[in-house]
Image (cartoon, rainbow, N blue to C red; front, side, top):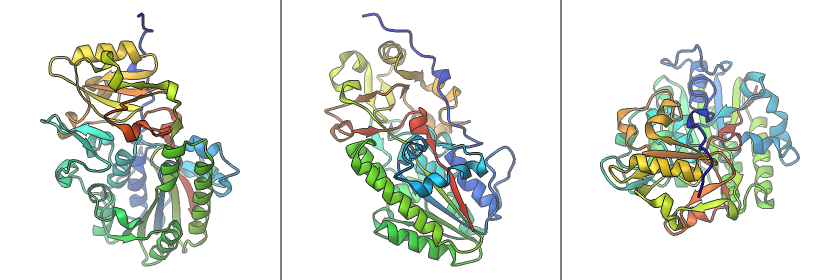
Length: 389
């Protein structure tokens, strides 16, 4: 078989780390709250506010929001407030997946520094994959991600700081390494979270509140972003955001953002790694997820695996060696030594509407309708919508 020429991985639209990415959001807010250690200049700049709230909606991509003005009239009315009125979105980071993005938000660092560099990554020195969303198998959280969060730094500086989310997330390792600092308040319903977030904003002269809603992402994975179930959840998100905005105390700024977007991938556009001997040759472990794969080679087979993946999938994916992906800035301006080995020997990010699934080893993920992870605008661009009082 003759394969098309592969696409140069350097042409991938790397996230805008340091200027307009999720990892720049909390540092910009912290500067406005007077927290030391967050110098300005060259990064994201936001007007100061005494009270700041981040409402992160899992899966609310910029392109999805713009495509559904009837389901989200309130959020649509805020589109002009993005990035201080420029009307532009943030970029999530690579991969555009929840564990990576939440760590970028909470630490104010790109993935190459905080180290949550994918949905599933290899634990260096082992032949074991770690699911960083479920934190399985368990790894010491603070050895895995040693940097303090922006919430911890704000709390130390005297800012009243809290997270308002589902009680299920209070004690998870991901919360500990990405979102800890101040006080965690568990609230079951979205409405209760919005009401309590507004209450906590008013609890002191300087406050930082984070709140989160996951059900939009769940409907997208299960039914797709072209489903009535997904649209119904978007309508609820819109009502929640408006509810919180109307409850804001004086001198407050509300920022509505997301961790990634999402696309639907048809069954015929899925390549099954478990049934493809060519893609599996020389591969010891398949990490990442369908649209952002970390491929770990058998020692000595790295070049061959890269060559085969480039030949077979290079017209549909950006296929890079580990060093090429790092050099292209996919994971940020630097990659810490402890993180280097977590990145695949080969990193493959979908450019087209396709995915590399693994039907037998990843049955749950392979059955999802909506997917994300790569650097396409549909997945990578997320809103930053602002309401101020």
